[in-house]
Image 1 (cartoon, rainbow, N blue to C red):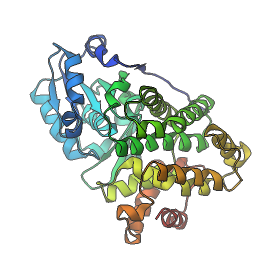
Image 2: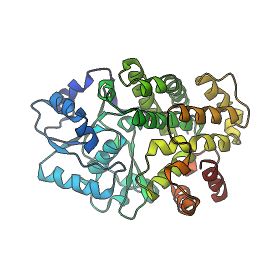
Image 3: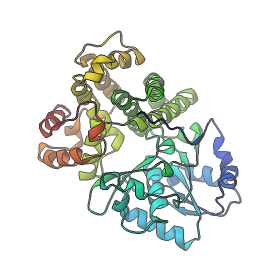
Image 4: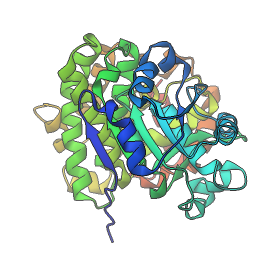
Length: 382
């Protein structure tokens, strides 16, 4: 059976952040906690969102770490309760949106956060008591504003996924104007996160033709505009297209992700200072080559269809041209040459492999990797 769900309201255009008061009224949020991070505040982007919020009473939590943690969730929940909030507005990248989803759970459900993690069997325990959430992304990368999941480092150090359709934001306001000041390095890293979602969900074996179509279109948009957005942050067309690609990747990844994400989730848990999008970019070439051997990839000519979407004349059955095109794009964007340039050493591999094999994305890769195969992909990504 294939289950296909597209459930939330999405507005994408320059200036849609002005709809915040109307969306609060529609959803029934009277006093939101605005969840953001120090960088968004320092860049002045938070001020734009708060100005749009106008007379709506609100509180602000601006201490989201780059990789959201259970400790940060607890701090935000404390403020949520102390300020008498009844809903959330996330203004930021995937970290702020994911943290807000963690708050939506923890503010309304009992017990430690890991109780509700997907690999702990926690998804059915997430109920409709979750606090309502409006998402206002300020990067074009994770697509968490239209996704049912969140990734949070829990108290025991694991980087875990939390998934429920009840966590889907009630509204997503995608305003490309909020991304115009994003620095080139962050534009590139978050943009590669969006492209990785499109690549990886299209490779996943689950049956979801609408997701496949959305992923391929998002891949084409993102590939055609990521260099423009990185080179000229004021390129409004490129910013709009990258925001769409990010949204499309996340709309599609309800189909499942795979080894890119199982590895990046795990390594990001081992070293939370590493940027998730950058890690995805590093792992993508090796995973494309590994996935080329999957029956579904060959039977459905998925390598060739991805190659066509990014403008390659063709792709061999081993995925060599496609993987090399990704590696060359990483270089043109100024991203690191590999994990070694990020300070990752083989001494970490055992821990990374253990985490990857336990990750919720491990089983949805078109080829389920063994520990030795993960080790080969890690070495290939150095």
